[in-house]
Length: 219
Image 1 (spheres, rainbow, N blue to C red):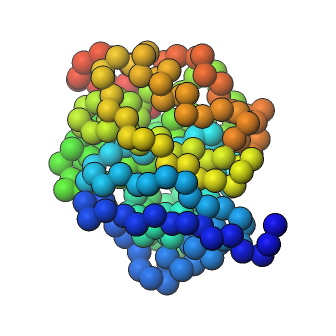
Image 2 (tube, one colour):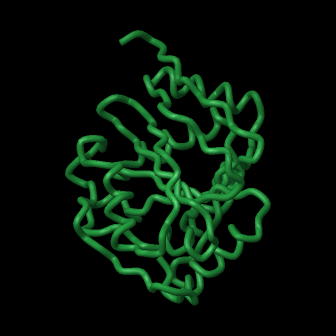
């Protein structure tokens, strides 16, 4: 492998939420290229969506995602533990698009997040549906419930370490049938893509979502 790989960053459409400047974009492209990462596929030109990222098995996933976000000048928002938003680190996390959440007081999180997405002119909410870097037997259903309650599509994005590819898959419109839709969404990912395959949450575990709002349980 050479010292540089063209990241092949796609252009964002006019309706997509944007952020960051040219310097940040150049930094993101440089970090992707020097690490050998590139993008496959196009980014959908829709103003609001829930973007799901998997497999999530290492801290490198977050860093790689930030590089892509900067390189594309994409204004995605992501949820993080409130303890990460203190002091200088908090300033950086907010600049990157972070939204602090106190999980010990997270009642109504799904409803409130769905409301923010629904009422925003543009909002790309980035979620790792596994919810942890450690292995678990099922995905958390919060991402799906937010998408249904906000009436927005789901955008599957795969981190494939075996090929150093960030793959943008076709936009998915949830039907409201969580069990059936989950099978389709999980088909975009497999353990062979993960940096640590042993930590990947294998398809098969199901976490049922309430069929209709109001949605009460936080994820």
